[in-house]
View 1 (tube, rainbow, N blue to C red):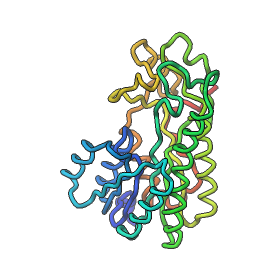
View 2 (cartoon, rainbow, N blue to C red; view 1 turned 30 degrees about the vertical axis):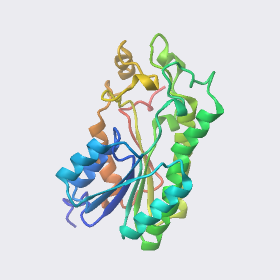
View 3 (cartoon, rainbow, N blue to C red; view 1 turned 90 degrees about the vertical axis):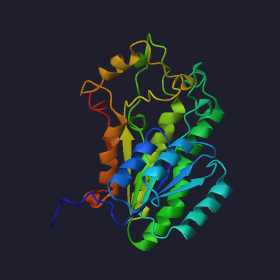
View 4 (tube, rainbow, N blue to C red; view 1 turned 45 degrees about the horizontal axis):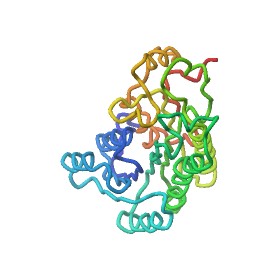
Length: 279
């Protein structure tokens, strides 16, 4: 057996939701660098055009772009049917989309924290954190099962496994992650295990990035403040003594997407610098 090409995605097709986002755009670039035939990107209407145009310029003929409001279940279902009819043989699904906004409790005024979180915020967290993935898995995962193989990757979080301590945020402007986020990611991990059981031989795994701050976008609107030493404080919680970089997620994703993980399913791959291994 030749192990040198085991990570190659040659001959495969992937669909990714949120493919123009902070992690998503790097995931797409990584898939293409590892020789995948085609990446189908599903994005929110009116967003990500700069990323789309750059990808089309560099990887012409290997990118397909669809826009849909994933909160609209009926239109999403129609869009997914269209994708299935226009792109035969999709064998990788990456559920990456999630709404980081005041609607899911990420607020600058801390109105989304445990003490004041509202029903609507948890509802939107469930919709974007669990239902979006479920609808895609139901549509594309069942098709993969009919094909006899495939890989589904759900982008989860260490917050779905462990709860952050309130003391982590004491004295800093940075708001704690809202409760709906961890609840949704825990649900996504449960969905990962369920799908791994019921869709076999299709493999379903989760990738959980931890402490990888987004410094390139408007983080203040989501209650995240990085101006008062919070990131240095956070880095002290990591066994590796630093926060992560988004590009460090790409090869773990490729591992789960490729034949390199052919005997791995129902697993949550934590890429978090040792954040959760100690008390």
